[in-house]
Image 1 (cartoon, helix red, strand yellow):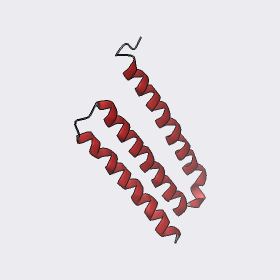
Image 2 (cartoon, rainbow, N blue to C red):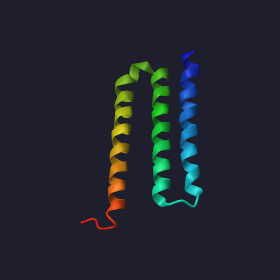
Image 3 (tube, one colour):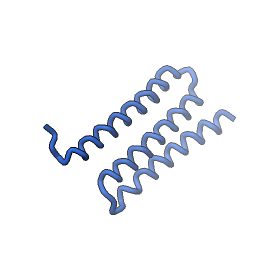
Image 4 (cartoon, rainbow, N blue to C red):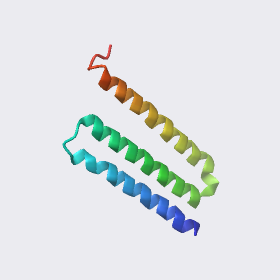
Length: 92
């Protein structure tokens, strides 16, 4: 049962990775494309890490560190992108 749940989480993560890539082909703004890619990539990566956590519970400290790092890194990156886009190109 754990194997099925683990592979399901990994499969969902891979699905999110591809799902976040498809908006890059659209005609929306660059910020919309980056946002959709970032959110889908974060959710996909977190889902894959949870699947690995179910599969290899002995590695939980490193996998939890990976989850926390993903959450913090992508949140900070989103704020930096929003700040840079709202300042009108004046980075000084």
